[in-house]
Length: 311
Image (cartoon, rainbow, N blue to C red; front, side):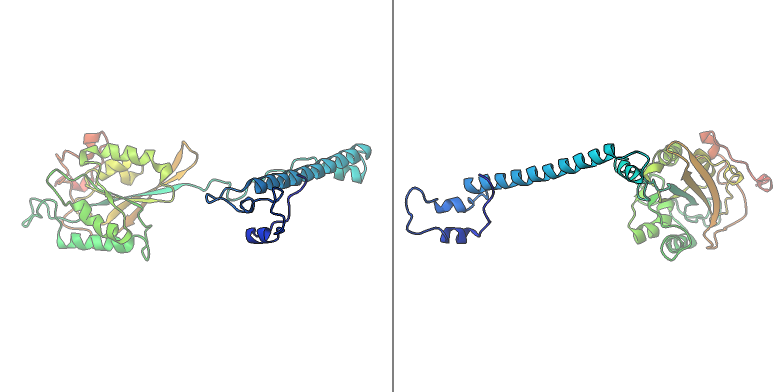
C-alpha cells in the first residue's frame, strides 16, 4: 500500500466496479461499506493507515530538514555578524510573561454583623413574646432586603447565618430579619450554630475565607454576643470592644478581610447603619447582664458605657 485511494461515496465506489468481472478478483461490495456497528472495512482500514503514515513521514522529514539548515547556517555564520545574531535568536527560548488571567485575583470577603429584629424586653409594659418581633422589627427585615444588593447601598449577601433554632421552635428573631433577604436572592439561612456555639461560627468563617472570595456574609445575632463575635473574628477596633446598647437596632459592624497572602489577611472595620428608626427605649445594658451568651462567657468581655452603670 503506497497511498490512500481517493475517497468516494460507498454507493458510487461499488457502482464504478466493472460488472463483468464477477470472479474472485473482484472485491465484495461489503468491502466498500461500513459494518452496522460503524467499524471500517479491511480495505478502508489499510488505506487509512497508509495515508496517515505517509503524511506523518512527510511532515517529519520537513521538520528535520529545516532544523539541519538552521543549525548549519548558525555554525557557519560568524557570531558577531547580524545574520549570526538573528540565527542565534531562533534558538533562544521566548520569555514567559504572565497574562492577566494567570495572576491570581485579589481575595476580599465581607462579614456584616447585625442585630436580630426588634422586640420589647420582658420588663416592658407589653413585652414581645419569645422568638417574635414587633411590627417595626418585621418591617426592618423588609428594609434589609432593600438596602442589600441590587439597588441598595450595601453588597449583596452570598451567605446568611442565624442562631440555631431550639428544639420545638420554628421561628426566631434572627430568621425574621433575614427572611426577606433570603427570599429576594434565593440564599438559604445557615442555622448550624447555636448561640452558645458562637466561637465555632467565628472559627468556621475564618477557616473558609479563601472559599468565599468576593462574597458577603450577613449574620443576624444576639446583641449581647455581637462584640464578642467581632473580637473572635479578629477585630480590635474600639467599636468591637464596646458593649452593645440595648436600644440599638440600627448599627451594623462591617468587617472586611483582604488576603495579603494565603496565610495572612488584612482586616478593616466600617460602621454601617440600617437607617430605619432602629433605636427603641433608653440606653442600657440591662438585657445582657447575667445573659448566658454575653461576651464575657466566651472570655471576650466588652467595655460598658459609663452612662449605663445606673441602669
